[in-house]
Structure formats: structure tokens, C-alpha cells
Length: 111
Length: 114
Image 1 (spheres, each protein chain N blue to C red):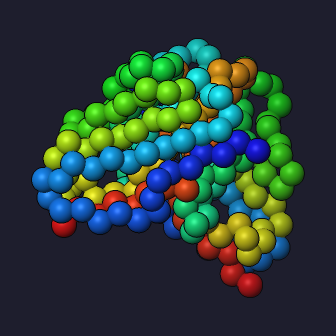
Image 2: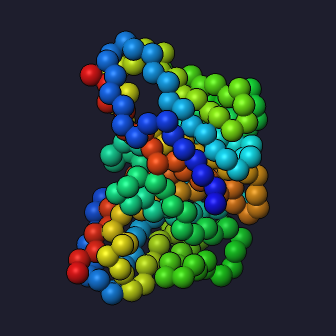
């Protein structure tokens, strides 16, 4: 069975600083993918970034990067130069036929 | 842009009522999903469907059923609503894609069962 763990229920970051949201996973599959979604207070889920287990380079999408450490089974999301609009819930997840989501981390960006 | 719409943003029902949550997507996606979201538990998959008239149980199907009569519409049914089904319900759709079947989500329905 696959499992995703996000140990930070809430995080604060100062505007313009970088922040790392933690995510660890467990799977017995050789091939899998890891992803992050953002959920603003309006409720919609927004796809941010994806990393395949065989990808050698860490995935990046604009200000988002996924720090993939396979041996540690971690897939942390790094947001550079935080903006007020980054305040939201962030969900890490793993693919394996279906999507398995973590518990979420609520990020608050302070002006 | 992919658009997934859900019939209601907020819904209040009484215990024992039959509840229908409707989801419609406009991008001809084969796959559709229903999740519930609860604080501290993330999103949990209730049911999903890979084709018309086809359905598969997710991780927490008890107390729910689904219907997919048309490709664009996936309905979640609470046969007899109970207070422990008070939650946020999210619908999503996707198309088989490599390397990742990105799921597109609707805005959610916040259901309260009294």
C-alpha cells in the first residue's frame, strides 16, 4: 500500500522568503510519481508540479521546485520568493493507478 | 480550459434524506472521481469511473453510491444521509496521459447533514 505523510499542519513564512513544505512517502512500487496541489480558500484544487520516480532532475515550475530524495523517500515542495497569494493549503500525493493525497499543510504568508 | 462544475457550493440536508451531488466536466475526459475532504485527513477517494456506466469503489465507499449515465456527468448519491457525512466533496476528471494523469477539480460542495 502507498502512503503519504505531511507532518506540518501549518507553516508561516515572510513575504519574499523561500519556504519548504515537507512530504514523505512509502511505496513498494518501482515506478511511481509524486505531485503537489494547492488549494486556496476558494476551494478549488490547483495542480502545481509532478516528479516521476525515474526522473533524474528535480522538477521545477516557475517558483515551485520539488526536492526529490529517493533514498529518503521524500518529495518536499520548495516555493521561492513567497507571495501573499501563496497562502493556501498544499497537498502532496503519490500516484499508483489512483492518486493518494497527504493530510495537507496550511501555508500563511506574512506581509 | 478544462471546466469541472458541481451543482452546489453549499448544501444543508437532514439525517435520512437522499442526497444527490452532481458533477459535470466539459473536456470529454474518460475518468471521473469523487473525493471527500476532512481536516487532518486530506482527500479520500470515494468512487471513480473510467467510462460511462462503469464505476469502481475507492477507499471509503460505504454509505455512498454513484451513477455515470453520460460521459460528462458523474453523480454521487448518499442514500440516507448521516451526520458523519458532513464534509467537503470534491469532484475531479482526467484523461489518460503520460507521465501523469493530472486531475482537474471542481470548486467543491460543502455538505452539512443535520
